[in-house]
Amino acid sequence: MVNHGMVLSALGAVTDPELHYDIVTLNMVRNIAIQGGEVTVDVALTVAGCPLHQRIEQDVTQAVEKLPGVSSVQVRLDVMNDEERRNAFARAFQKSQGQKASAPEAQRPPGREGNLWSPMLGESSETVVLGIASGKGGVGKSTVTANLAVALERLGFRVGVMDMDIYGYSQGRMLGAHGQARANQEQKIIPWNAQGVHVVSMGMFVPDNQAVVWRGPMLGKMMQQFFTDVAWPELDYLLIDLPPGTGDVALDVAQRLPKASLVIVTTPQVVAREVAMRTADVAQRAQQRVLGIIENMSYIPMGGGERMEVFGRGGGEELSKQLDVPLLGQIPLESSVREGGDRGTPVLLSAPDSEAAITFLQVAQKIHAAAHA
Ligand SMILES: Nc1ncnc2c1ncn2[C@@H]1O[C@H](COP(=O)(O)OP(=O)(O)OP(=O)(O)O)[C@@H](O)[C@H]1O
Image (tube, rainbow, N blue to C red):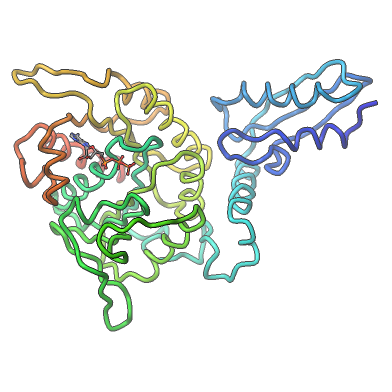
């Protein structure tokens, strides 16, 4: 005869596809009712309209129907309230940090209130903190970060870039900054000043182009140090170039920088959009604001308004509709963008009249409007 404990332990093997932890740990199982061989499981999703609800429903059914004595399984889906959702994300975060529960205070991630790594992260701070995320690698997230930073600087704002793409760090090269880290009298790291933008990157700490070996938990440690150990000047915008990745990265940022908004970079390709969707989905479920979508490599300008759409079309627009956030712009694929990045003179400075440069400026304006709406 099947009992409550057997069902619960079977459900312990069902994982939330994005948070990567089991639905029991995440408190997603609200109730289990058993009548003879008929089992009913009430599952609370983290957010209404969760695109992965069918998968969860299917996994729960499969896990429970295998148990001896089970004749039928009914899964009833509901949605968590705000507090339940916060707890679920906190649990996922604690798990992702392993032993962190007993870590010293300074290493704990800041909560929504107090214990912030930097006054920049406080609710009352005027600094807009934007994580630039992508999901899939190679879509041009770092290029977009560097150009947006320069565009915002050109618009008259004080801009910082934190290169958190730890093993793919490239902001120094793209913005034309180099040299080892220097410290001020208080032993705080002085950011590079490149093209008027203040930059901190892993590239300051490793000899030329050496590879960095790192594991997931390092992201948090590095981010903490990049906030606490750097002599950041007053900033209007801090852009964080995030490593590519889906759930774990978005979750990390949501937990550590609840004030930050995300800008998602994708390409017109369906596969890039789908991966970006997963990143955005986790961010939204963690109640982190997604400011908008930037579609990169959208088309090659052929002159006379003609466009060649090498990577297909519609990825950015589709994603913005799915997430109900604005499409901030479509950046063309132009050799001047790549050359600018390789030479350390972003296209906005090396070819200011190019279509890409003009689009970056427009996107920066839209970001400013959206961030202050
Ligand atoms: N709009 C564009 N036009 C031409 N080349 C581009 C454009 N955007 C990016 N690139 C080029 O594509 C390559 C990948 O870009 P980038 O390094 O910015 O991607 P990424 O998403 O940050 O990659 P990763 O996720 O691996 O860090 C670079 O060589 C860059 O110069």
